[in-house]
Amino acid sequence: MKRKTILRIFAGLLGFALIFFVLATANSALGNPISAMLAGRAARAHVAETYPGLDAEFERAVYDFKFGEYIVRVRSKTSPDTRFTLYCRRGEVRYDDYELRVGERRNTLDRLGEEYTTHVTPLVEGVGGLTAERITVFLEKSESTPPEVVLDMPFSKDLPLDYELMIGGAIDEATLARCAEILTELHQTMLKNNCRFSLYTLTLEGEGRSITVSGATPAQIESGELAALLERAAEQREPGTVDAKEADAPPPELVVHIREQ
Image (cartoon, one colour):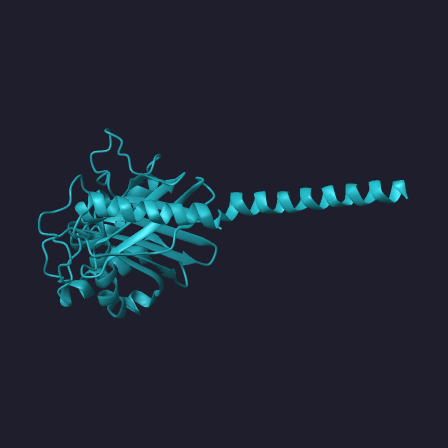
């Protein structure tokens, strides 16, 4: 009888230990409702104090187990580009990314790139026999956001902004000559449709080989020497660098990467 009692006590303690382990594991991976509630409360207080007058909507606090903190996403009810995230820990807001996403208008830049991508996607299909699988337009990185970019501004391809067009897809045979042909046809197609880009990046994935050309400019494409420029760029020992002894080397922004599969 005494032994059965001891076994029952041991089983009970083991059960409690297992329950505690499961709860602790879940808490470390998923967080807990009380901490999430405190994070949401802190986020609302932070926004009310730091950004008064913002007609904000708050998403439910989500636990990020990688950094051990809760993130709360906030958006304006009236401004589509006013969206940012707060990062909370122990019931307090550690920081937010308002200045980056809204102040520096990164949300606006991302949206303009997405809308431009939607606009050019039908134009790219079938160019040079390429089956385009990835098409992305984004604004070239700069130290500051161009003054022409205003929060919630409508998209226009006539804006004087430096956009880059990045395309990747499958083709029967990936060669530097085909890269030059496709970039030339692509650039001509864009010009015919009043779409202007400062840089082009192209990735061709063929049988047993893939080639990526980064940083091709309209001037290089229109020069008629693009194929030769690509050949010289591919021969460089370090992609993106130019040997000072090679007077005819391509500009440092033109990079060619060839990967044999």
